[in-house]
Amino acid sequence: MKPFQFPAIRPIAERAGLIRMFNLLLQESLPNHLVGRVQVLNLRADTLVLGVDHGSLATQARFQSGQWLNQLNLAAQAYPRLPKLTGIEIRINAEPPLKKLRRPGLPPDAETRQALLNLAASEPDPKLAEAMRRLAQVRNQRRHTTVPADESSERSTRSDEA
Image (cartoon, rainbow, N blue to C red; front, side, top):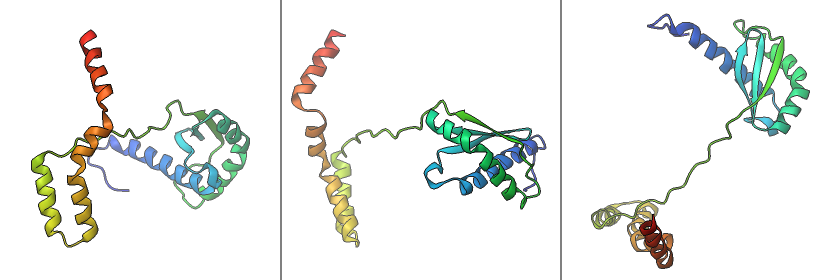
């Protein structure tokens, strides 16, 4: 472990290292359909706290926790700093995984479009040059496909009412 400039950080970093190591060992011992869906959340005394993403998965995890406990203790023997576990606690993660929101990008202005066309003309890679030319032509297409004329007039009347 790296030496720390601030001694107060050492116990926090060591605890985080233990949790991370147990999570790596857990992921190696899980069946393929559970990898990534069961995570180590905490280590309390000698009890490992696992988080799952769904209630039905929590039931399955509780059923298999004894087997996982034995596998983790066997794997942890290779690492002398890891404590021997006496139990596993299962929790359901309250937060659902974050979804990536797709926001429509703004179309490039005339100056940016011209710069893209100039770059495309001097680009040796034909695929990249073609992608730059397509991006430069996006301006008119996006305006008409994202907000049809009917909806734009409805939006302006709604905003006037508010």
